Image 1: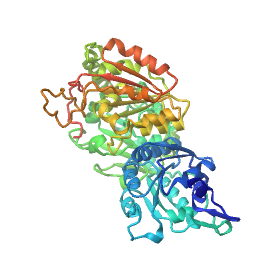
Image 2: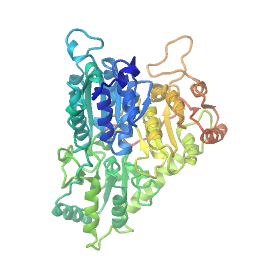
Image 3: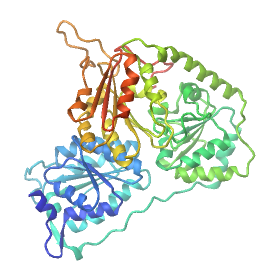
Image 4: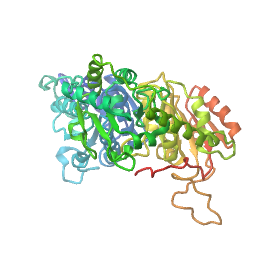
Length: 560
C-alpha cells in the first residue's frame, strides 16, 4: 500500500511525496531522520529514491535532535520526518532545542487530510499553532504544487539571519495528491547566507578597546564554530596573543591545548577580566549573564553577534560588531596588519591566570590519581581522555558527567563537541551521536553520558547497530539523576533522584550485536576502554562510579 502510494504517478503527473523529496534534495538536504507511519511513509520512500539518506530512529525526540546536529555539522538545514499528532508533539522538543541553540533544522510533520479538518480525524492536531512559538517559520502546505515554494521558504528562514528551526505541515491528501508536472512552479535554490560585515570604525574601536585593556579575555562561542571561522579566529588569537576561553560548544575552534587557553582557570578569568570580547557567544546562563559576582562590575564588553537584538543583552556593550563571525574576524585580522600591537607575554594578568591554572590542577590531582573503587569522575576521565583520538567527536550528556567532562576531555577541532547546549536539554545524547556518525563516518564518535542521560535515548543504540555506526557509548553510572543516591534499603522507596543501582546497561549493546563492558574497578577501566575502541561496531562501556562522586569544590553555584 505505502510503496504503491509513494510511487504513484499518472502519465505527466507527480504526487506530493515526490515533490517534497525533490524540493528537499534541491535545497541541500542530505539526511532525513524520522519515524514513519501514516501518512508520511510515501515521503520517506520518495526521499530515498531522490538520493537523500533516510535514517529510521526509535523515538521522535531523538530524530529531531539528530536532524539539528546534522544541520550544525553540515552547515545546511537537514530534515526530521514524523507522523501526525503525537509524532509532531514528541518532535517539538527538538524544534525548541534547535531554536534556542541557534541551529537550523526542518521538521516535516504528517497531518490529517485537509478535507477532514475539524471532524476529529485520525491524530488531528493544531500542529502549525503548536510549532509556531518554537521556530522561525511554520506553515501548512495546502496544495502539492506549492511544495517547492514552501520548502524554499522554510530552508531560507532556518538558514538566514540567526539560524533556527522551521516546520512544514503535510496533510495526507497533499502527500498523495497528484498534479501535472507542468503546473509545478520551481523555486530558487537557497544559497549560502550573506556574510555581513561590520563598519570599519567599529572594527578600529574594538581593537582600540583591546589595546587599552590590562586584563583582556576573548570568549569563543559556538557561533564561531557555526560560521566556520576557525582559521580566522586562530589567526586573530595568535596575532594578538590574547588569552581566550571557549564556551562548551565553542571548544575546538581553538585547540584546548593551545598555550593561550585559560580554560583551566575559567572562574578566575571571568571574574577578574577588565575587558571581555564575546566572539559569537551570549551572556546567558552559561556565561552567568555577564553579571557580578561572576564578572567585575566595571568589566567592559566588546560583542560580536549575528543578531543585532543580542547586542547589550544583560550587559551593555562598549563596541558592537554585528554580522557574520568569519567575515568580521577577517576584518579584524586585516586591520591588525597596520598595527604593531599585541598583548605582552609577561604581565601580572598572565601570571595570575597561570597560578590559578596550576592551583586548580593541584586541587584535582589527588582525585585523578585516586584508584579507590567505585571510582570518582576525575579518575574515570583520566583513562577516557588518554584514549580519545584527536579528531574525535565527543557527545557529552548528564549533569556532573557533562560538566566535569568539559574540563577533562579536550577538543582539538571545531564542531567536535555536542552537548546539552543553551537549552540544557537532556535526551540529546544518542540522537546527536547518530547524526555525527552519519555526517562524519570516518571520525570516531564517542558519547559520554550519565546513567540518567543514557536512559532518555538508550534505545537509539539499536539504530546505531542497524546502520553499522561504530559509536562508543561510555556511561558513568552513579545510580541517580545528577548526584548519585545510596541504594534503597528494607523495601523503602528511594529518593526522587534514585535510579537502579548495579544496572547492567552494557547488555543492551550485546542484545543488538555490539560489544558491552562492565567496569567496577579502576584496574579494569583501561583495558575495557581499549577493547571498546578497538571493536569494529558500536559498544557500551558501563562504568560504576561512587554515588557520592562530585565536582571539585566550586566558588560559585553553577547557575549563578
